[in-house]
Image (tube, rainbow, N blue to C red; front, side):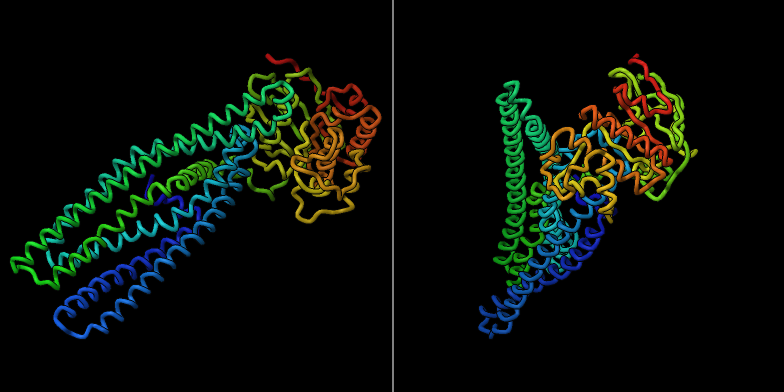
Amino acid sequence: MKPVDIRLIRYASAARGFLLLSGVIGVVQTAVTVAFAWMLTDAVTGALAGRDVTASLLSLLGLALLRGALIAASDAAGTRAAARTGMELRAALIAAIGRLGPGWLAQRNRTELAVTAGHGLEALDAYFARYIPQLVLTVTATPVILAVMWWQDWPSGLTAAITLPLIPLFLILIGIATRTVQRRQWQTLQRLAARFADTVQGLATLRLFGRERRAAAQIEQTADDYRRETMKVLRFSFLSGFAMELLSSLAVALIAVAVGFRLLSGDLSLEVGLFVLLLAPEAFLPIRQVGVQFHAAAEGVAATEDVFAVLDEAGAGPGSPREERSDETRRAAGPLIVTDLRVRDLPPVTFTAAPGTVTLIEGPSGSGKSSLLAALRGAVPFEGAAALGGIDVRGLSPAAWLAWAGQRPQLSRGTIAENVSLGDAEPDADGIRHALASACADDLDPALELGVQGSGLSGGQAQRVAVARALYRHSRRLDAVLALDEPSSALDAQTEQRLWDSLRERADAGATVLVVSHRRSARRIADQVVELGVRV
């Protein structure tokens, strides 16, 4: 784990401000620490000499209050910086996933991404509030205190300078050993979340086949694995803490013993000896705390590394297809020309879909009908060419040229109107009702509240709402290609005929319509039929 990953400063402006603020607080804390040691020395030696030490005691009280205020300010700033950095990284992660496209997302575990963006980035609190301030103090306070010790008593400063590097050396060795177990712990947590989400989503099927107990046992086993990995991390944490405390205690003891003998021999004054002894623990304290907080911050840092990996992948060189695809304002109009488009080992496909026509995609199961639409919307990579108005669709955002409805409705919690107008910053109530009517869903109340994943509707109703969403999208961008994947698979014959008539009206009004369907009734409205072959 790097002490501070430069990518954190690049991707999160809040981190840059906090590092600067931590540096300022660290400098002030260093001055307060040295002043406190000096005033305490003055108070003790003054009391022994019979002087009035009231002023020194009041100064000590003021310095103690100031030091406490600085620590509180650092904690508060760290908590705010962690929250702001988490929000910035989440926003950057979502934007990066949008640039990478659905094809990239389809190859990733979405639950793991959710855990990273949620629980993982929330763990940044320890990193910002405790780890970074101690790291800054190690850079600012430790060298200054060593210099002051050397200035006052060079043998003590030399002893501290020789023993101090042993602590980061042991910290590096222990860190190398703990990195593996910490990464394994984080991966186990992601696997646990993914398994739990998959089990909950498929619980009805698991119960139907009597496999719910086995699924529960697998979750329990993964949770037990996470417990064991967590205990390993704790053991390494205790080991590193013990090593840090032992080494620093021995180093301070060496200085104290040397100072004691020199005081007895008269080679060192009490004032200098006490001042050096008070500073010695402070010289080792920041780097000891870095070792302690190293483990508390590890989970948040592991999450940021996963986020940075996505951000780096999305930030491929200028002019890359991913970067171009993120341009939502770029539009294209004209015929959709597909030439020798091939997905994996499926046969190549060639056709031209012109405005004002309905193109029907037919073929047996496994022939690549849905894969063709997935390729056009960027969900899977493909060979060959697909251009809209002469512009390669791989250089366009799918949202800029495609109004699409798949076989799965993919509805979300909210009203039917919110699901239909998904992605529209200013929904049109009349347009929503018209889209529902065109999708043969005019019997559904747009204000009806749906549950998680659109629960509350039948399969046919959910499919019609999804089709209405594509129709609404097209009505807001008339130059978009309307693409529907098996839009009538859950509809009865009468409703299906109404849907076909609605799509024919759209095409007659100038729309480019692509329909994937195994229903022979769809041929009635088709201007051309593209028949796909079987899998090679």
